[in-house]
Length: 275
Image (cartoon, rainbow, N blue to C red; front, side, top):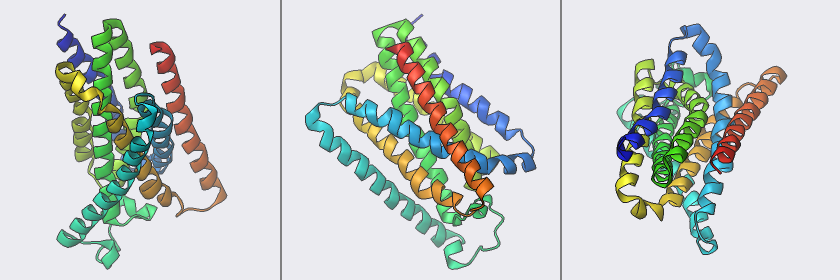
């Protein structure tokens, strides 16, 4: 089979599996989904931070020379600050064209994000950032899968399956964030599918111009990491502080730890399989 066809098929695998997992979550009844959402947010925090610190950042530094460490660190810092500015712009745009809790216009809104202490604009921007971060991350995954296929077909197949394995729990968590940010089920599923297609885009572009993308790949990884760090720390963690009872706090800590453990375990298994 043509190598390009194989790359397209296997870069699509992760997206299909993650969408199927999200669809299962979509089929749950409203009251079940509302009960699961806060737990999904806690799990997503752990998963996002683990992907950033256990996977993306170390991998980015492995791909550059020591003299590039400072510029790569600067990219992560610039990414975090850039996402802060981007979120501000999204909030300002929402407040200008619609109601904004900061102005007291939608204090009685039934947006589920308000139950977690978000402003409506902040919650919406968190959803936009998770889509952007996922798109960058999935694009890089596509490049990595294509690079593996161009090295060896078997290595490419194993790499694509490993990528799919660590994407599934992360994508379910991301879907929970989109619902928590006020997106409808249909829109959340649509944007999840759209973000997953960037894996195929990354694979196809890498097939035709891998050498050109190779030098910039660590910086794609750094930007993806900075987006996940910002979302977890700035948008999601503050929402957990609205409930301070001991039982809820212990559940949050346990679920964050579970997210970290699962992503780190899957990453290490994939690394051992490939390496």
